[in-house]
Image 1: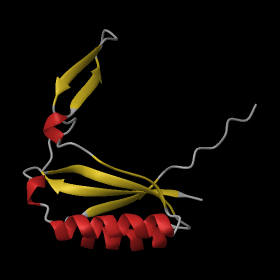
Image 2: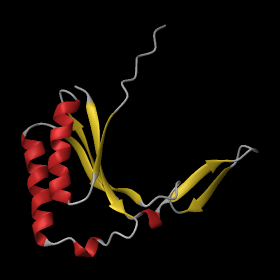
Image 3: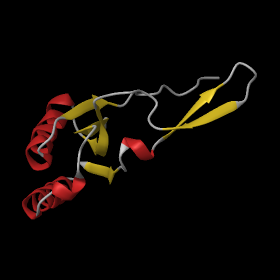
Image 4: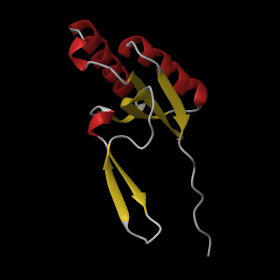
Length: 119
């Protein structure tokens, strides 16, 4: 079954301490609904982008590590679900529920299907 990423988009100044009990309850209910439907493969939250590390290959072959996200952006991924759905329409239905529960925008994107190597 195809897999889809439902990524929760937080603004750069997002304050997780403002997440009230109602929002936490709504997200928990959504997680339970996804699990009961057999759609949830994995879910996780991420620390803020300010805690990220970016790695880049240098011309000499070494790798540099810097503080912060790879791209400067006004939004970053604050959490995500990996869902197994019949198609994009089903994934979008879960995305709609995620927008309501999380109270922020989400992005839904299909994982690429890798073809097996043929010898």
